[in-house]
Length: 133
Length: 133
DNA sequence: CGGAATCCTGTAAGATACTG
DNA sequence: CAGTATCTTACAGGATTCCG
Image (cartoon, rainbow over all chains, first blue to last red):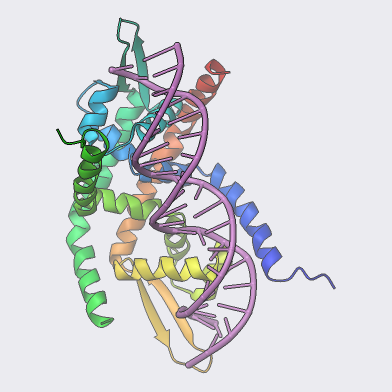
């Protein structure tokens, strides 16, 4: 009998499941939204277009690497647009696309849910922590 | 003049910002939602209560460690309830709380957004990849 | 100014084995 | 059955430095 019993079967299942998850739009979107900086960048860009370093200043604490990385993936997904103005010092503006504004609306919905139920979560936590002294 | 110019200033800003983010309900919720397994567990529990190993079997590819960890944090946040029945082999049931069902509703909203705009994202990506051969 | 390339490190996921 | 304890990796995130 093969020794493939517990571990290998689960590993295979995980591979299949990862593929399934990668193909799942919802899961993918959640991964995107949950990214530490994505929410902040979208929020920063909501009022209007901004330059690279303005975003960096507004977000305060982001390294250039992460800012670029975040903006790149958002640009690739059609969430933000990138406009280069080849003046003497280069000028690059970022703005939300229509799709990006739609995403901002979704974030607003999440925000409202969070604000509505935040105290319930807090209460549940305090109770849980009290019970598990 | 002090040598604290670029790096240290940003580090300080990051500390402040981390505190700000930790206190932000929206950001915190996003972090929770984005957790790889949370969405799956909530989805698995949506139809009704389930036992520990049933969830593990349904999710397929989750290690006992991650399953327990996920369930614990969800329980602490008041998203799921944990019921122990001290029979001969112990039996533990997990179920969504009202708050958990509310969260499931939010996930549904996210899902709908994802399904609605997924093709736009796909298109944007293909175009982006084509331009950056 | 707006990035790209490189290296380094902390965290956290996962495998594995064991317990009440 | 329902976990816990431990170990090991992988990779995201950040500092730093240099280029167009």
